[in-house]
Image 1 (tube, rainbow, N blue to C red):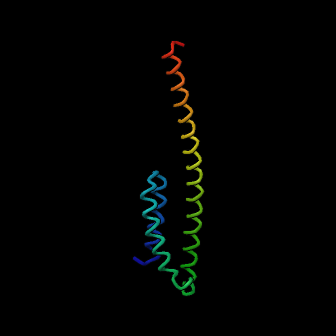
Image 2: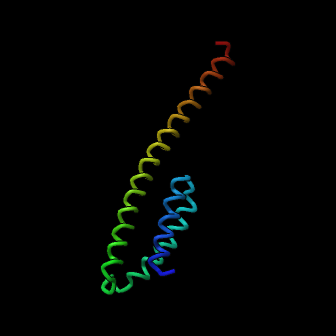
Length: 102
């Protein structure tokens, strides 16, 4: 398997982990992928052939799509956490009022 094939396989893994909500595994796969990308581009990308450049542009586009998804998920999770916090506060107030007979 070539370095580029490994990068593509890890990109698939990162996307699958994000889809499953496995952020830890996504981060680990991304770290491995980043190391391979660094190795591939260690000379600044000067030695890359056109096919490799095309594939790396595809990886960059896929990264941007994954980042957009993560930002959407983060917003949704933040909103959910806020709603849970409000619900807990309302529950505490209800219990306090019920305990006071009110």
